[in-house]
Amino acid sequence: MSSEYASTIRERRARLREGTPRSAPRALAIQLIGPLTMLAGVVWAIAQPYRIVILERQGKSLYELVVQPPLLVIAVGLLYALVIAPGLVADLEDDGGAPTR
Image (tube, rainbow, N blue to C red; front, top):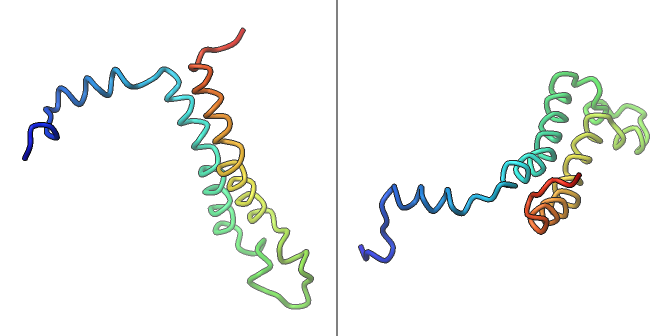
């Protein structure tokens, strides 16, 4: 193995400490909101399966099949994770994580 690619554990830890910006926990928290919201929707759908009308289609319209609270929660989490969170994280990184007062 070439020594160009190998490094010691201490060197890796030092690089991680130096390279970790102050805003990393904030960015992580912002990025986790979407997946946690989707997880909450899935847990809700499992906990209350009678809310999902897709399982029983007897005489239901398309609106009643698509617009279900757990499914909407999952959709909002997906929208947040794909559309809103990347912009918030980019703004946070541009700002340097400095709080405004």
